[in-house]
Length: 184
Image (cartoon, rainbow, N blue to C red):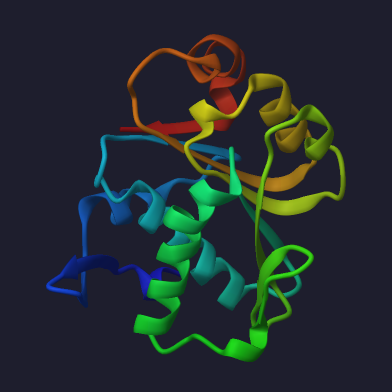
């Protein structure tokens, strides 16, 4: 499954892929909840997106949700990174990209990666998904994250910049340790 395990770097506005330790570690995680803490430019988001793209290309009819606290945060971060990875690798097809009602890319396998924001508890209620990526999860309230995890069938990805302690350390790690892979 790790055939797309390359990291995207911006160098003079030219994209280059290089293997990184972070990407290799992320592809080795196996537990249901996969938590990744790291500083700015640590390749957390890009590495998890590469995993999500690989998963969507190699499994049929899966729904992968990439979620953040706000849509502007997604646009300037995960959505931009996703588009750059897809275009650089030659995977992009404009016909597979829909921006309304929810920004979604559909792969030839029938699997989809959707992007949406959750800033209220009510937005966390709704359809189930197979995989979720909670981007900068420390900026999303615990009651919302708990609902999103409950509505996710298989794999939960979480990333954050470790600036302070939050619910991952107090509500999740002590009580769900057996189902969490945690790397920094």
